[in-house]
Length: 461
Ligand code: ARG
Image 1: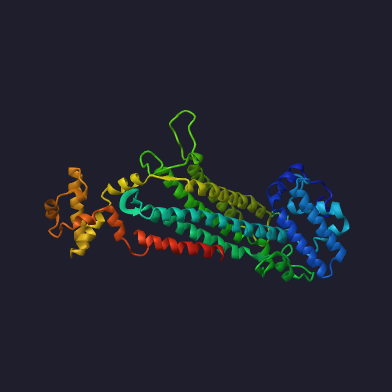
Image 2: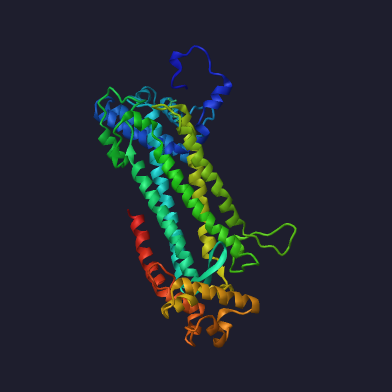
């Protein structure tokens, strides 16, 4: 059943047989492999390299093989070299002679490039819609929490008050970029390599344009050497997937922190948390932790393929067979993580009172007091110094800024008047930040409206 026995007299070593085989990994490409072969056979018939009956026998045979794999009647033989050899040897076993003509003008090198590109386009579409589903949950949640005040942090120290909506919308921006990166990568994946042969094209007058149309590709590869040795599209995908995982991981880190007793901002639904075998009181955010942990695998996949590619001379090299395990792992990991993360977020209980309480503490309104002084004509640098001293006073006396009597505040700056107190309420602090991109509820409401449109635009791009 080998595709290349003729030149050999000796048998392949058992160990090499197993070491060389990629079937266990690439068998998931059988649909793409069969669809690609059907298009190739139809094209060979149009160009007169196959009799019409031969092409019909090939297409019918391939269709049967596809049906038999899907129904479980056909099982992959672990001894097969790869999915391409497996499908071809099944075909020859079923239809004989015409099956042996299928590989005319084709190499497994352009075949595998085709299969992976077809597969990845489809996966990118699915991942894009998973991301769109996550965006919908985020946008709905943001709409619900336009007025939910919470502390914003820098250095994980309370900085300035924001709203939960504004915080969630930061992730909407990240995931919008992820969606954009995937669509972008899809454009460069959407290139049809068949006709490149092993590396130098083919002597047959293949109608590449016909195959391109049959398989729904946007463009034809323009250089046969590049077409069989290019895995940029795999790398671009892995980079995009790594960045998306990094975003999920940062979000998960926040959810882990927020669901701790120390923060207490949120509580995971029972369906998305787990317990401890020894400590009866425990409710652990395992899902968020696992998503955070799985991020490492996807980075590993990216680095693995970058490293595989870095020293390869043109054109195809067997090293490149290693690309698929990494690619599939990244696809599966990102897909799984999105599928579990989205409902975890949808069912999250938000403890508004805890968020509000936290926002009120920690002098998160200190910048607002400085801004108040600036509006009264004080230079910002001076105002900063004044408020710094007021904060120090508060720390020494166990007070919040808005608890200090006016007479005392005036000792820090004569510009402070009675009208300062409403300016120090966190809700007001947030409402005043109405600059575009800021957390004021009306501003964020508009950002949500625009983001819904932008999500649709990326999906249909
Ligand atoms: N299994 C191979 C891969 O995944 C297919 C191409 C093999 N080509 C070859 N000439 N051995 O890269």
